[in-house]
Amino acid sequence: MQTRHIMAAVVIGSIASSAHAQSGVTLYGIIDDGIAYVNNIGGAHSVQASTANLYGNRFGLKGAEDLGQGLKAVFALEGGFNGFNGRQGQGSREFGRQAYVGLADTTYGTLTLGRQYDPIVDTVSNFSAQNEWATDYAAHPGDADNLDGDYRINNSVKYVSPTYRGLQLETLYGFSNQASTGGGEGFSNNRAYGVSLSYANGSLNLAAGYLKLDNPNAANNTNGAVSGDFGGTLYVSPQSGAAATSQQVVAAGGTYAIGKATLGAVYTNVKLTYLDQTSLHLDNYEINGQYQLTPALLLGLAYTYTDGKSDMLTGAQHPRFHQAEIGANYFLSRRTAVYLVGAFQQAAGDARSAEIAELDEASSTNRQVLVVAGIKHSF
Image (cartoon, rainbow, N blue to C red; front, side, top):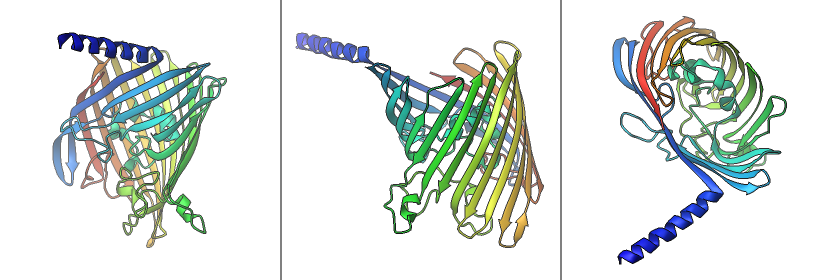
């Protein structure tokens, strides 16, 4: 009996070694938990457990198989979770953050199929403070431009070109998975498509992108390109609560490094139209900077101005928001960091109350202050 166990172990080990020689699989993850203080949520102070602040919690597998002559098969399976209660994120999906498979070629680029990030998230979002040091609370109002990656694109095919003289093209199409009607409405009912172009040259990095969603999260097509995790106060009409019939995002940004400092700027334009024929336009203007004071200590400062226009049945409104963040990230090691970030938002124009992104409820006044401290560990 013992001999059979030993022989079985040898055979399994040989198979595993043979498979490993032809491919590589990486198990990885991030857990990020903290405590947040908010001065006004619905008229009251709040101290609460806050998870996935600096980086989204994740547990995943990714890998590649060398097929020869510069061609590889690639895949990723990545799930999100709440670090305080262990529940799955992204609508309780097992692999809600990413799930794709494809081919990568050194000459022709990479083609992948599955649940994936859109081209703006892959490129322009990297220049926003929220994805560097300022936590998710620095996302633009309602994350309507999706720079924080609140939703992914299902049923998607993505192509990323090789880099040529610093330039790289990315395109994506997310199918509705509905049959086309006579007018073509079925085929476009809950579909998505986007494109981005990025450029890198030494200290300079630039990117611009476009994303369009048709009938996102449609009630009569929950198997389309965007469903489940597409939600928020801005995705329904402020007038009647009617669902969004389309969302369009145009984004551009860049960073420039000067010694230990990096300066960044991001612009996004969002247009949402609703079933009740109303619409919402948001222009977000962000500037940010970070400074590597020591090899372990990173300091950051950011400011975003949001200029909105909503065409309501009762007339036009012009909500505006000012938000600033200041923060510090201290790296205890290459994989572990602690952070402290403060955010302040003031509503102006026709906006009656402030509401920092990712909070469950708005302030009872036009001002809101948040301070979050936490720890992030990568493995």
